[in-house]
Structure formats: structure tokens, C-alpha cells
Amino acid sequence: MIKQISLFLENKTGRISEVARLLGAHGINMKAFSMTEAPDFGIMHIVVADTERAVQVLSEANFAVSLVDVVCIECADRPGSMGEVLSHLAAAGIGIKYMYAFSEGEKARFVLKPDDIARCEEVLRQAGCL
Image (cartoon, rainbow, N blue to C red; front, side, top):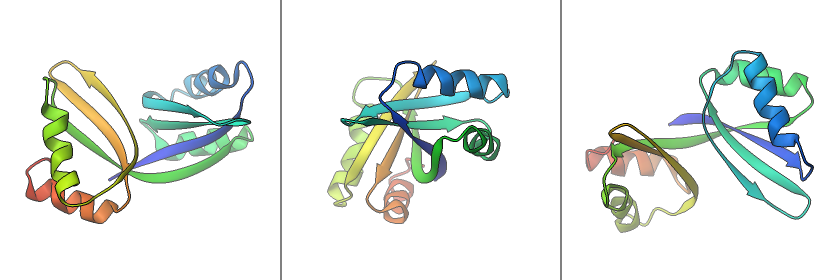
């Protein structure tokens, strides 16, 4: 389990840039992020190198910030590897609310928000995926 920052941003040009510049100005590196849209706002999910500092900086800049527990899984960056991992969760009846992925070199990582984090981690450990 890792901590992810979720931000609610109004649908306004420059808001994502503002977040990226603010974190960069404070030396906080974004490791991964995703953006989803709703009619009046967007939700930005961010994994950073220094979560506590990022929450402080974003809160002080009046962003609506929340911390969310998510699971980050690492697997080989090859066709089918994510499907293999996710099949264990499906077989155990664990739902996924959302997920996003990125790869780096030989490894792929994906961040997911399961409906039951403890059970998700247990299933993944038993399958040798964590």
C-alpha cells in the first residue's frame, strides 16, 4: 500500500500546470499521475516522492487535497504481464475502482484503487505479485 494524493481541480485552463509548477518549485517529484474529468471539475491522482511535503505545499496553496490508500504493483514490462496479475484479483472477486500504469526500463508499475485493499494485498502476496 502507498499513499496517493487526490486533488479536485476546477475545469480551468492552467490548473494542471499550476500543480506541476508548484510541486516542482518545492523540489517535489511527481512519480505518476492521472487525470479524470467531471462536468465542473477534474480529479488529479498523484504519486510523489515526498507525500507529506506535497500535501503541505498544495494545502497551503488552497488546493482541495486528500490522501488515498492505493496499491502499487510492479511486474515485467511485457505483453500479458498486467493481465496475469489482474486475473488473480478477478478470481478473488476484488473490484478495481480505477487504475493507471507506467513503465520504466524492464519494469511496469500500475497503481490501483481496489474495493478492498487488505484483501487485494493478501491475494497479490499469495500469488507472488507483491
